[in-house]
Image (cartoon, rainbow, N blue to C red; front, side, top):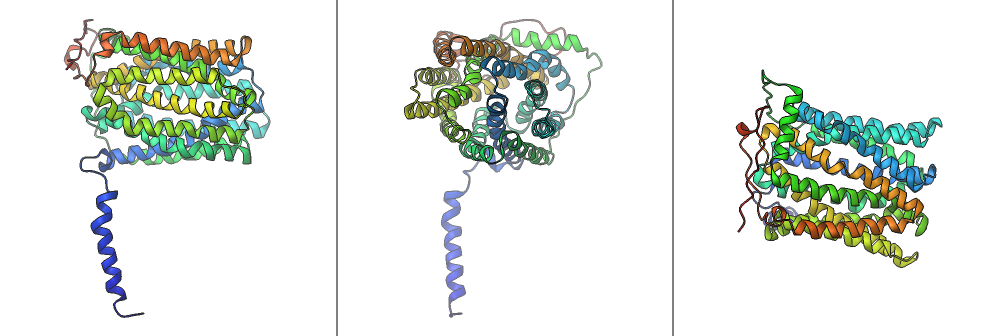
Length: 457
């Protein structure tokens, strides 16, 4: 070895240490510098990647392998929503009495079992639409409780004034999976078939649960001696009903959910039957969704700070509506395939803008003892219109045409954006509000009152 080799090597290392960290390291104060949040973020990234497989494999199993009709696809989606309507309110009361992180961990593990049941049933020759309906219902039931717990865990890890930033970073974690996930999922589905591809999601969900188990949150639940189930449930509903901002958000986002589910029940059918795309081509098209999520995740927090959470939410409605309306007019050729990918990009970008602001606003205004009941009540309210939306989309797709479902979703979303913009309670929200006083709301004696509107500049 030549003399001076080690000194040159050390000089090179010193140069790397001086220049690269400044470019590649996280900025001071970034949320990802916090070890607890970083672990939570990593879990979201892993489970989101597996979710991309299920997002394609589950409907493709029904549409291609079981030859489901549009009405059956609508019913499958409705079965996933039904548990939210049935169980959201009581699960919120229960969650306010227990530690949230163990519920979140159990939910990830339970989802792995349910997802793995589909390839097992296929291998045993038992798979049918009935099996898919039951699996969809159980998945919805797990999300009803564990999904609410996951949202509350975030508020235990991140300060409330940084919730929009946290939700944007969580969306960025999902978007990383959405960029690569659909292409990999499509190739995997083509290689082993849609049912077997679901095993990948099951493994990733187990990995996500293992990561979550390492998170330490000092959450102490002190049972109240006067706790009563129905009384506490009513207190949570009263809190939501007594806050004009929460009521307006529930109505607006509930309308968006109706549009979204009317479109989602037919978009896979439109891709495979109208555009003639293969499973792998559908997966590649869904990479547009990842691009849209990345863009909105990177710039959503900045846009929200600039124009305010309320207007940013309305902008998300309009972007989604444009995407669905464009696809309803797409030709059945290569241009139509491009429009399909563009629709997915616009939908993802709009949905991120909707949810990073919707989640942050409702969490910011709610005192900690009521977070479980508020979250479950809001999820219940916004998903009540989702079931009829899915059934209506399936009915329109089967009796009028797949384009009719997409046109209905697009026009309704644009109308919703216009109505939401005309509502001052949403349009005037330019910053996150402060939480209500817990003492004013906890317990059956909580009185219904109108919460003051957030200050506007």
